[in-house]
Amino acid sequence: MADNTLGSNHRPLRDVVTTELRRLILEGKLTPGERLVEDRIAERLGVSRNPVREAIRVLAAEGFVEVTPRRGAAVARLPSDEAEELFDVRMALEGLTARLSARKVTPASSARLRAVLDSARVAVDEGRLDQVADLNTAFHAAVAETAGNAYLSLVVGPMLRRAQWVFQQTAKHRAPHSWTEHLSLYQAIAEGDEAEAEARAVAHVEAARRSYLAALADG
Amino acid sequence: MADNTLGSNHRPLRDVVTTELRRLILEGKLTPGERLVEDRIAERLGVSRNPVREAIRVLAAEGFVEVTPRRGAAVARLPSDEAEELFDVRMALEGLTARLSARKVTPASSARLRAVLDSARVAVDEGRLDQVADLNTAFHAAVAETAGNAYLSLVVGPMLRRAQWVFQQTAKHRAPHSWTEHLSLYQAIAEGDEAEAEARAVAHVEAARRSYLAALADG
DNA sequence: TAATGGGATTTTGTATACAGTCCCCGATCA
DNA sequence: TGATCGGGGACTGTATACAAAATCCCATTA
Image (cartoon, rainbow over the protein chains, first blue to last red):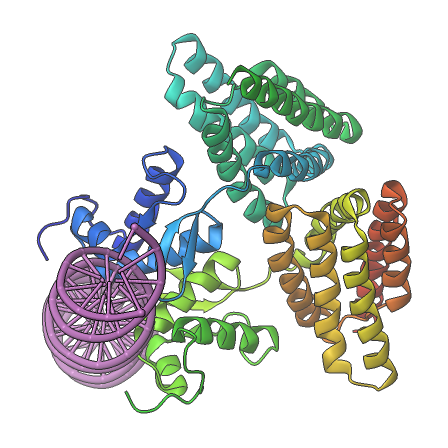
């Protein structure tokens, strides 16, 4: 093999390739419908086709890639109404997550949530917007962890990644990160108020939907 | 290669292997924690290691298999409380599915639902219990399709498979298929009554939870 | 001009080869 | 006796090779 363009010594190449391809898709460097030719990807990343094939299977299972037997893989096309669909699913699942979190919150998990929020506030103040996106994800992950439902986390993680992608694809700009809403959600969770936590999570998604529709209207 | 023990000419071997391994796991032929040695699986199915590896990645993404780098794959172990967790997620998602189905139902989709229910009734009457399980899955899939939310379907399908698996693993007997409840859910959907459809779907899952707890108590 | 046919090219599917790592097990030593 | 240190087998990670299918291109023909 030529040389590993991606550095990274011990992590299996298949994971590296998976992460890299997912990043390219999420950032829009690979656009929906674009074919993923194994040879080209392999050569570009300096690996053989095998890790690439395995990465493609994983991304297909996550819904980012569509593979047709004997005709190869392509970046998934978005149904035009997928964004709307996702908002419905998000409301159901993020509402559930918030409710369970409020039910099971502990001082330790509460502290973790607050820590993420604090980091986010600092990042916002200092204008590090790329980190804000990651912290957004981290906050949702922390809430999911607090809920203590492993299967829920398994589902919610990919869903949020997809939501972020779909939003960017259709509305052509980044999702706003409303930290005041996150803070309010955190407070309800910390107080163990299940109904309020669920309501605020749903409201949070509703706000995202409005923002999405507004962005669509702008063009 | 020796000879393809699995027949099947045109479908890629990787899909055949995926399906076969998933079947073995769901039926309990492969038990949680059991290692999946690529060589042995490949030899047993009469294929090379490559399709096996790709199948394992897919199953890992679905949560049926856990992969540790450099140490191979094993059938996923169930957290002891995963069944409880799944009931929460099912209530949220199946409730949403039912509500959306009632909102978007058409004469055509209504007919499809009724057709599945009729087949199921016939199967029950004739005592073909294995088909009943498949029809159970088919009914839920049809409801998901009626809901017209592609992402929801993408999530619900794997969830139901996993629920079936978890139920069997922990309670050591098949989930009961309550066709009267399905019928009642169908009626609410067909009438377009969103709230009632959601309530019946949730009640259906609640009933499943009670049945699960009862089975646990029996031992 | 548009449709068709066939061969070259591209690309996927599958198998095989080899290197590196992990793990068990037995021997050695404190 | 118990811990530690190889050594060898088992298994995974990655690369390469080859066969078969799909696609493309262009010449031929109606």
